[in-house]
Amino acid sequence: MFDILSVLPVGAAAVACGFSAAALIVWRDLGPFARLSNVQRIGLASALGVGVIAFSIKLTVIGTLSMLDRSTLAPTITDPETDQVDRSVVVGRPVWQALPEVAPEPADNPTTPEKVALGRRLFFEKALSRDGTLDCSSCHDLAKAGGADARTTAVGIDGQVGSRNTPTVVNAAFQARLFWDGRARSLEEQALGPIANPIEMGADLGEVVARLSARPDYVAAFDRVFGAGPIDADRIAKAIAAFERSLITPDAPFDRFLRGDVTALSERQLRGMALFEEVGCIVCHAGPGFSRASLLAPEAGASGIRLFPSLPSDYEKTYRLTEDLGAAKGGRAGLWRVPSLRNVALTGPYFHNGSVATLAEAVRVMATVQAGRVVGDGRVETRIEWSPETGRITRRTPSPLGEAQVADLVAFLESLTGTIPNIVTGE
View 1 (tube, one colour):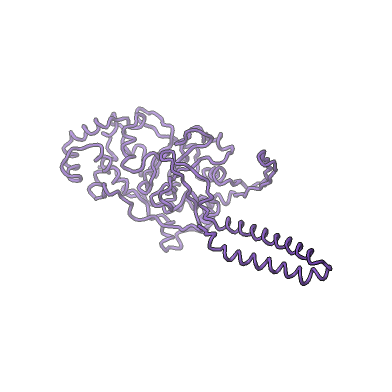
View 2 (cartoon, rainbow, N blue to C red):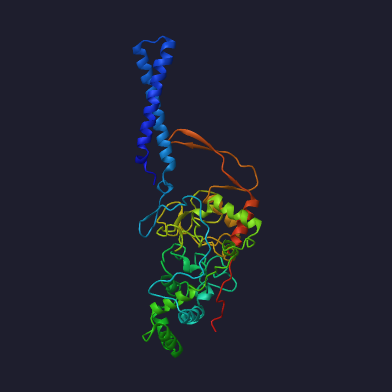
């Protein structure tokens, strides 16, 4: 934060010098030349001195505002659960970071190979669903859909269709907010949600525990991992979460590039990387996880919840962006967790309702409704806006984003695709 008190002595000295110089010029030069009396000279010197002071005050205000920490001027967004204000912005130039090779883990659920193996088995266990027809991989396909399901919205028990697109579980270990509305704060909390959801896996957790407890192989496996004791929902969640923490992709071309392989990114991808910063994508998709809702994001205490769409456009109607408002309790725009862009080229269709089929179109939408850019190769028209509050007309020419630049951004996003580990059938 800029400290105005530190410059007050310098500013006062400058004003005094300016006032003295004005008085000297009037008394020795302008006064004799214009044949002014002493009273007239004093009046003119005073007038010029007041002008010097006013000009100095203006410069001080301008300088102070320009040097203020931008976080104090950022628009505020309220976390709907905690009512904490998120003022996070990128201050200065961003620092690009590779994804860590090991995911963070909570103190009460340390990762072990045995726990990961048990979690992998549960991930592919159909006994976790009400009728034994679904497992976690039914909606989180690790082999073909980047940990999502390639559907517009999720399809659950009895063919029921949900209202939201399936988020990927790959690299979810780095997220501080899970589900589209950000309601879960850990993988352990998230793991049990789909199992008990009546339109997803539709199971009763008590029945799931009873089924697993009736199988000696599972009883022995849980005892090896957690020690002797009954199988319960908490242990099931911890095992699944441990497996999901192994589903990370720190070997994407972007990561190899940052670790020293300068050939890992093409020229087009490098242009897209620069555009990602220039357009402002990095304001929300920050840090190695490319999400402000990440455990690794700058200012990790921020909520990672954002307004979407934040600017009105025709896309709202075209893609039904505001039919579901997420965590919002009303208003024109929704409140959504900032998703990670890791492996985003594999996880379409896009947005909370899966309404956008291609990554290029998703870029166009985001550039328009979040960054205020005009996308396309046509002529950009100057916008005339009337403000009833100020009684003024303003003219604004939005910054264009051509289709070649959209392609560059898509190419950069493709560089965030890594190799998904542990692609197994659970056998």
